[in-house]
Length: 81
Image (cartoon, rainbow, N blue to C red):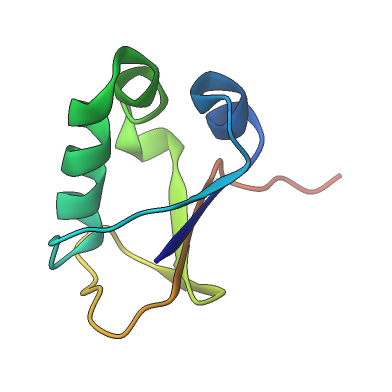
């Protein structure tokens, strides 16, 4: 699946997107796999309360299933102004 990173998540990981092969059943399991890769991923996913996730461009929760998902995007909460 394609994993997209936005704003400070992208800055900490150093990539805007990457193709990920995963056995994760949920977003939370995917996050655990990513955290285990390298320190930069661990830093980016250290505080999940500061992150939002979208599955195929629809907002989702971290316990959402990944079955059939083609794209996962991680980003900080948006603020208006």
